[in-house]
Amino acid sequence: MPDVPEVLFVCVHNAGRSQMAAALLAHHAAGKVAVRSAGSAPADEVNPSVRQVMDELGIDLSHEVPTKLTTDDVDAAEVVITMGCGDACPVFPGKRYLDWQLDDPAGKGVDDVRPIRDDIDRRVRELLTELVPAATM
Image 1 (cartoon, rainbow, N blue to C red):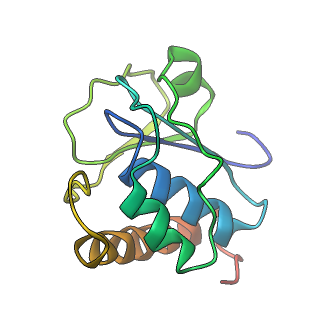
Image 2 (tube, helix red, strand yellow):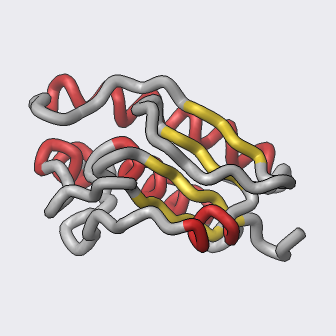
């Protein structure tokens, strides 16, 4: 088991849910967890509504770029979380796999993306307390 647990968030386009989850976990974990996100068919850019609702929390996604999911990403992770999008993800023994059923922010305005962000934030905070029980948020 690594000194710092690694979490991989996976979504098809890596432009919305997985980007928010990775950024929120990295923000709350403050270096106590290694975080990645990827997608099987990455988009060209992060969803603009997602960037805006994350900006509201002081989290800047303007430099994030959707990335392609690789088997190395999955192999390196201790926890792999798919984001309710039916994405195909390689399965390796000894990994913890979770599927978070979440609405897709694609095509939605900021008013509809905020509740998705808030749901992800709640789930990320719960996950962090499991991964790093002494974490303060």
